[in-house]
Length: 163
Image 1 (spheres, helix red, strand yellow):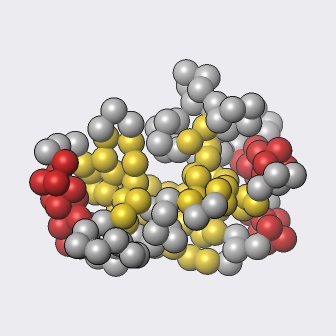
Image 2 (cartoon, rainbow, N blue to C red):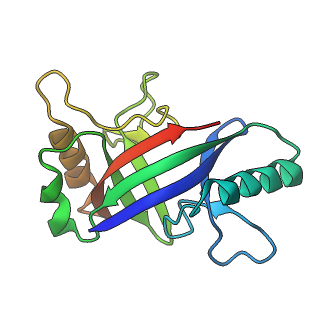
């Protein structure tokens, strides 16, 4: 089980993307959370500097800083840990990239035929207990739909904007 806690910035440039600290990109102080190994910034100041650098490089001011809190199953057999938890997402391993998936978006937009949507499309909404279906049942159903082809794991997800 992996605890992931720190600061991120979110950019809205027609679509939203979450950024954390860089892993391998030279001369850049940020990298998409989906490609950097899910590594947020350690402190708020670093996240704000990354956001400012992004704004300067991309001529935009549509960034927000937030606090990210996740607990991620590192192995599929750890998914059962989340049976009594709320605010769950599915993390899909797609090559070197991670895809963060929550329930389908209000506009009905899905990921192909999967019963879920990218967090950045659904407004960062996680699976929660609703209409008798537990958060775990929703996330687990999505995992079972994905796993014949790719690896997927469950995680708690909390994102609180501070800017």
